[in-house]
Image: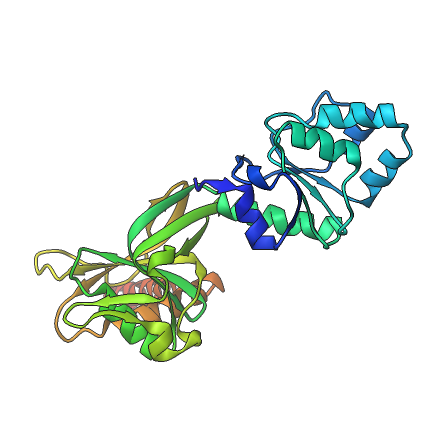
Amino acid sequence: MSELTIQDIIETFHLEIVAGDEWTHRKITTSDISRPGLEMAGFFDYYPKERVQLLGKKELTYLSLLDSKTRRERFDQLCHPITPAFILAHGVGGPPELLELATARQIPVLKTPHQTTRFAGMLTNYLEGQLAPMTTVHGVLVDVYGVGVLITGKSGVGKSETALELVKRGHRLVADDVVEIRQVAKNILIGSSPKILEHMLEIRGVGIIDLMVLFGASSVKDNKRILLVVDLEVWDPDKLYDRLGVDDEKMKIIDSELTRLTVPVKPGRNLSVIIEVAAMDYRMKKLGINAAEQFAERLEQAVMQNTVIEEESND
């Protein structure tokens, strides 16, 4: 899981600091946010104090109707020492009681010009992505015909060279060498590149190249959902490789399963074209068109027909 601080959301959403600019290093530990409605009325039994607290016009208008003593009591309970931050929507300023108590407990108060509901959705999506379970995989991630293809294999098998050929054929590179993978939901894995390696590709004998500079912005992509894994391995003449594709091989990353293909590598095989076809075939299978199953059905029908003909001739 990535470490996220208040400063990260300030920079991402261009939030204005109303108070507590020296405490923006506070960590955010959950992707859930809180809009304290019942708390404003005095019900704190289930107050999620560990969440970022978002206050909109509704909450602030209600508070303005309370007397100063009651309003201070509400904010005294809201400003818990583990609360990461308060964010005020619609660009409104903070009530004096909130600024005073938040400052006393070292909680930053921020504001955004966005509407409350809109900003809540934006912030929740961002936090879910950043705080999702994460792992790293040695490989290359390419967007091929809209399918996120993770190319894996031992070092030197030709992953980066294959990715370069795919980019030349109009596809987009997401990450080379190290792929950061976040599970944002069950069976939904999003891959991206570490910041230091963005848009970079390593080609042995040439070195590091910047694909955005060489091929333009359309040759790269910041992140992509991974749908298919293509594992490249050196051709083993003693190994039996799948020639029909009827049985799906699976690969587990974090808690999600992905379809995996093992592609043997030897001179004369055009790996980029093979991966293009694999991506197109994956899309067709999702649409309900499975060539392997159709072939198996035709073969079974042919065998049954020949059996009937043989039985009739014997009679």
